[in-house]
Length: 113
Image (cartoon, rainbow, N blue to C red; front, side, top):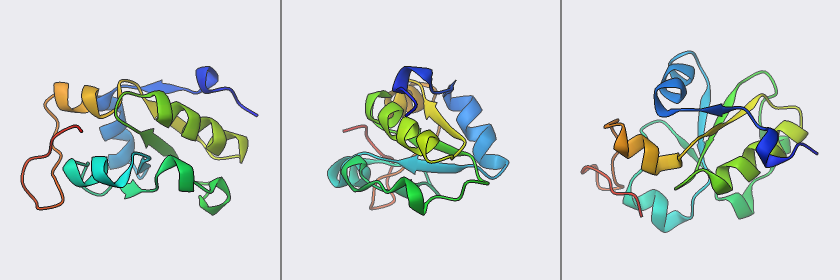
């Protein structure tokens, strides 16, 4: 199995570029965190429910959480299943600090819970 610290990292700008080229943004935070604010177009699968076998091995996946720790674990599990997985270094905290857009479930500007 791939160790979380062996997973390629990307910064928010890199994650946005990967998504523009077809990568899947995978948010592995808990439902209340997702509702508070998430990236438009991201797929939500809490880490505890993650099934790496359900992901396309031909599509890059960028895993996202609040700070980058849980998403590194998710990306390692995906990589172990043969998926080209990356971790968003710094998670949603870094995304928000970079001034990139994300919204709450109500469509209003999001918060990082």
